Length: 237
Image (tube, rainbow, N blue to C red; front, side):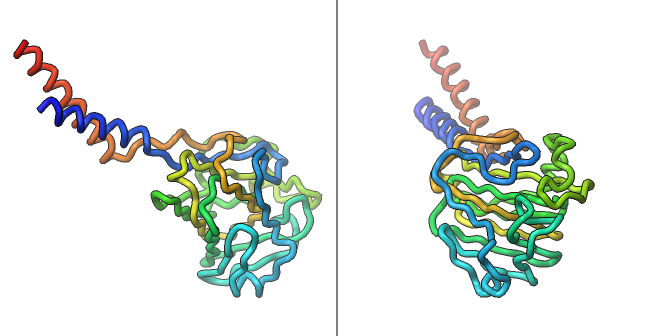
């Protein structure tokens, strides 16, 4: 009994310590590019056309494809285009764009402009499928007055937030293999990736991921069995 409970307890501890996920952060107002220090690649969409996107677009770190609706590459304006120049990716209602990475990445960042609480991400990691809605940003009390309104040379739209959003893998098992952008009028630019895991920048949107319920159940079982075995050992001394 003692050896079994010890084994279960060790297994539970391993499950607890190995469980990780994605940490989401947002940069200070006005920042429109990634702030990581490691080697990275950035897609700014300036040399891309909507027809190229529709046909599947391969860049330095992965392939973009339209898997629903009529997503397009749009010219800069008050709603998109980092620094008020070039182009940006626009995903209208009932549309979606899939980005599949050539190899798992430890970091992904994107400029989120004219933010809408209907903007959504589906994130595939090496260990699980995650979902992220940008209303988590709106609900996290991390936005400052300076986040509202375009910080680019094209001023305006004070009612919606603009910010640079980061996704950091907490472990190698949580490296990202694909991201799907969808929802209502998703404007985004300056997609940046790093193959390696990066030190956190920006302000965290949520606490570190906690173990799933089944993991908590395993931990609890291990603790109970360990206590029972210890009590039995004391009786037999």
